[in-house]
Image (cartoon, rainbow, N blue to C red; front, side, top):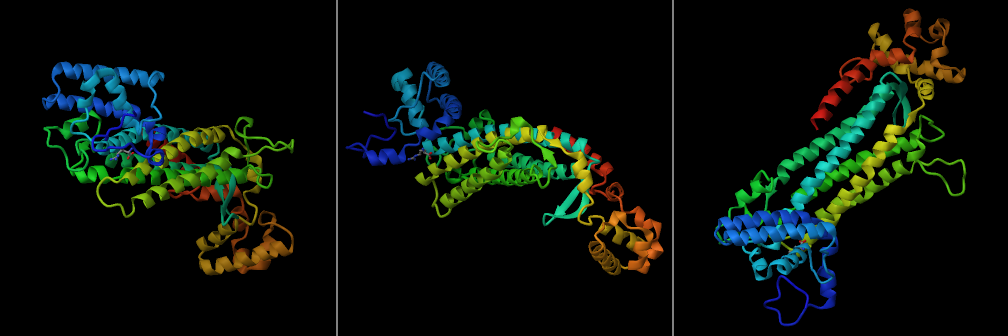
Length: 463
Ligand code: ARG
């Protein structure tokens, strides 16, 4: 007869269809180490409450250690009949302790237990995710360092807009990831609240000490309201938002890399170790890592949507719907831990085609704004300067030439403003000058990019 945690008032066993529907051990087994951790803390609080004597506590802790070893080695596995991780572990405890094993459940419910386990699991794994994010930041920053002064086409609407430092563009992605790390750190402050002690929903009549248990498990505090403690899944939803946001950032970076690696751009060459071939076209080198980073953002967004939809409309407190919180959370953790190292490797090993970037930086009349701003510095209203440069661009197109090839005489034909500017107008028509000129805080001047890098390195070191 399968062991259940709730058999007492039932005459017949559950229908197979119910068992199949309700079983969660196939996905919640990964909570086992955290469930055991919480069980140790619970055993100690039962002892302090006088509900386990010293010898019982010692046997209990010994059995929990033994069970943990057995879980680790695979000697203890959840059985098909175990409803969930809590059931499986209680079976393991009973196998080791006989009836003493049944004392651990006093004052505790799976409702506060599962909420505690999931918080412990997630706080632990968020630390791993943060480490992987820092690796990506580091990879982007070392490329940015090498390309602080490499001019590249800066784009809006995917059209050449103004030249930028390629390092500046790479650091833009670092800022996004740094915000993700910051969000996860901030998330942890709110996640660091222990539900244990809430019992099923109302707290316990036994003299337990939820605050001591919270401290023992590394939480900052114990939940102030037992009903909130078992009903709240904000921490899971918030984590899924953070994960989805990371997914979106990786997707945008991935999309850029797909473009950069294309024949049309040829800004980068991917390392063989981070690109794939085609089964039919021998010449192909495909950006699958970047595409999967882009593609997997879909399931991260889906997980967030799924959990919010599950939570919406649930009455307090625990409802079995809440069992649906785990799969999206686990999937998001797995997905991020899978994608991040691959994207970091891709970024760290890509070779930047500096010559190609520099050569295409002024394409598409990208220095037009510099010319207009020169006129502004000479006192011309921007509106008139904009107009004059616009005419100049059309003139270049009609005469099949580019701004950098114009002579003073060409310029003078278009507008008296250019005639008055003379050689100064020609002088602003170079890419490195255009970068260096954008030297205010946050601008793309290579010196500012290097300042940015110093500040970011400090931030990332603190992460
Ligand atoms: N497996 C459940 C979950 O993941 C925990 C069990 C609580 N079940 C219950 N019937 N109160 O949410």
